[in-house]
Every structure is written in structure tokens, then in C-alpha cells.
Image (tube, rainbow, N blue to C red; front, side, top):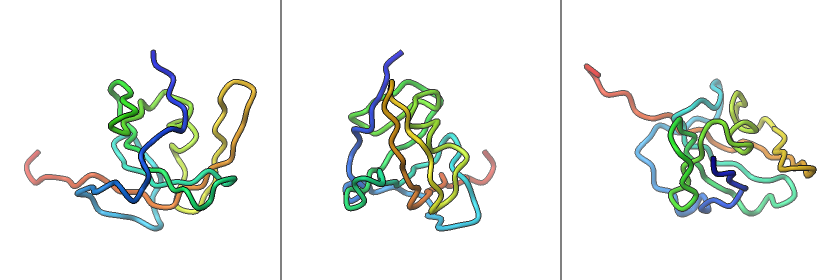
Length: 105
């Protein structure tokens, strides 16, 4: 198992074909999530939480990783705690991008 830290691509670099949400939903597996660490509010990050293996270069984070666990279940503007060893950092969800559903699938 690979443990991914909060090293992900900046939000500005993410172009995702998905519906953006600013409220009324929570982060789930399959979502792209834009977030910030509250001690770095001007450095938004963007990840896709998946059930497959983590690939930090592609910003895919397995749902069992600490970063994913800190984001899952939170809504827009809600805060979570990212725990890496003895260090805990607060993060805030900025946007949730739900994957598009294809008819008939």
C-alpha cells in the first residue's frame, strides 16, 4: 500500500468533465475534490478519490488513504483533519465534482 501525502496537482491544472457542486452533497468515492489546507489557503489542490490504487502523479487517491479519509463525507466549506503520523492538518473542501452519469449504464 502506498501512502500518499497531500502532494497533488494544483486545482488550476485540473480540467474535469464533471458537474461541479458548491453545496448540498458530500465527498464520495469517484468524486474529484478541490480543497485547501487551511494553513495554505492560497494553494488549492485537486484529487480524484478512487477505489483503485493511488497514483499521485495523476491525482488519484485511494479511498483508504489518509487524505481521502479526511475528505470523504464532507460537504463544500466543511473542514476535515488530515492525519499523517503524529501531524494533523486541517483542510477545507472548496468544490466537489461528481462524475457524470451515462444513460443506460
